[in-house]
Length: 218
Image 1 (cartoon, rainbow, N blue to C red):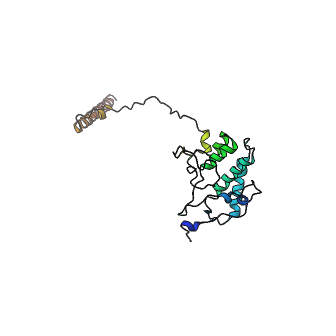
Image 2 (tube, one colour):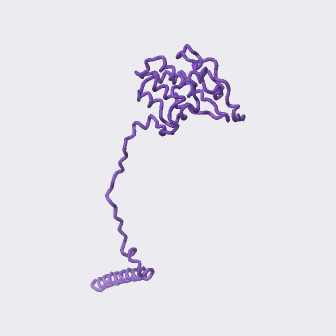
Image 3 (cartoon, one colour):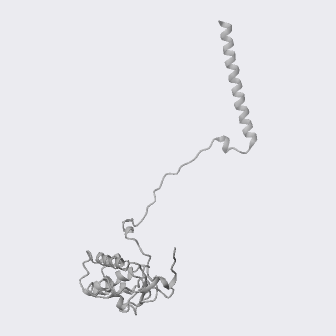
């Protein structure tokens, strides 16, 4: 088993493939990256295909994506998501929220698209910090106050807005008087035992007398 720690996990961004190819989306994402060191992957070809697949998913069915600038930003988001940049300690950094600002400016305020991307959630780093590019819209502007909300899964949309707990009629438990009346403690139990024993003895005498009478008669 071999373990790689720190900046040894990072390396230069790929120089070819979908993310670096200007013929695909007309932009080389890594040429304007704010950090040249990205997370090192053993199979960059597969990661480029992953980024391209994510990009095509974002394009599919989105009516607001009509300009090349909008498509460039979506390609940038896809590639920065798949190839996260490294910080000084070698840790992966989330995509910067400035990319979302750029998408809003280039693609319009399409809430369906923005919700699909999770813009405004805490999956993005504040402003231009994190995995970013130097030409992102809003990279040098915007409030430093963290107004992000927790990321919401797309599966949560099917949940009801309010959960109503069912109400049931009260259930009253009753206990025998012998248990409820525990003032006399052990004495009460002994008294009850003597009463049961006496009733049992009386019943036995009556049965015996009845059989003796039958014997005398017959």
